[in-house]
Image (cartoon, rainbow, N blue to C red; front, side, top):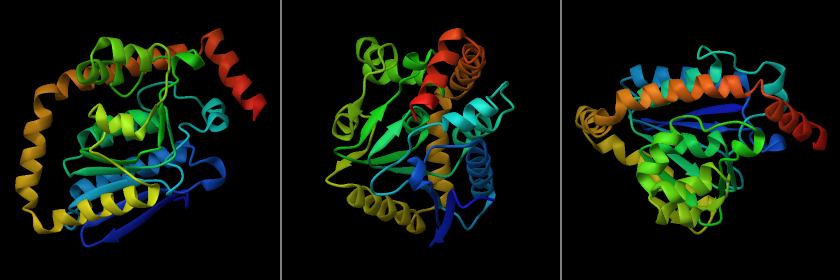
Length: 249
């Protein structure tokens, strides 16, 4: 267990806080494993009504911790990062996200699998996979073109262009853009606690119905992206880009 993920229970709301402020909440293998474990436990716990994933009021996550990533890169779909992806995909409880500051790579793609997302207007979201010699992951190659159309999705996935929290809300990638990181966190907590008063079964069935039409296709795409991502990690472009990132740090 690591303090890089803080767990807090409040009236049926489980909050998972990314807590590596000195590393901009960059995600390690241990953090992915703990997030996956917490999501699976919450899914089975009748006392948990909803899950909130957040960082601080200043930073959500800078994405993967590159040093940790290079030390033991995922070499199969049986790696901690994929365990986390599938745990979030399979979670039957409502999952809420509160986002402020940077949300890079999986910090953006994981939002596509949350049910409610509250962002600060000045949040900075980006999926720079191609810039690192990699390819999209976590179903983003399927979800983004459907939500945004091919042209806008191409700007985000083929060029790696960033966008703001205000744009995310306008495009339907977030539920609402708030005036600050503190406001986004407060709104997410407020909404999460509302599930205490709702029928857990009715909520679970409603989420299942909403997700069911795309679930199997999405799972296949995540697996296909994952296999290609693992292959791309060994490419000269990715090795050079990721090593250069470490050297600059």
